[in-house]
Amino acid sequence: MAITTREPGGDILYPVAVVGIPAKQEQEWWVSRGSHQAASSAASSNILARWRAKECFVIDNAQTPLRASLSYGLVTMLVVLCISHDQIVGYLIEDYGGETIFIKNKKCN
Image 1: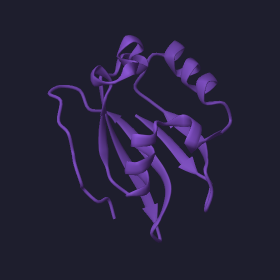
Image 2 (image 1 turned 180 degrees about the horizontal axis):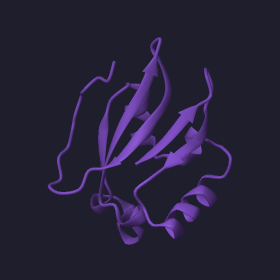
Image 3 (image 1 turned 30 degrees about the vertical axis):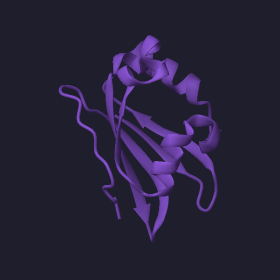
């Protein structure tokens, strides 16, 4: 699981925590995230559109161009937005292993 926060009213993402992966991969995760990054550079336009629509969604890396280098061995990830006062303040990413399930048009608020 990974937790990332979002700058209030902005586009900057800050990594907070990652658990459940080997220590070496955890170090790689922190290095790849840096201290912060812009949401617009961290995700595809499809993911950003779902984010702006405040949808929870599943990323199936086996169905994306990323399939050649699966993120930390995760094939399917559930993305759950953290919303406060109708603003996205962060998100959780959880290993959603097993059968691939797509969630469409499910509002998180």
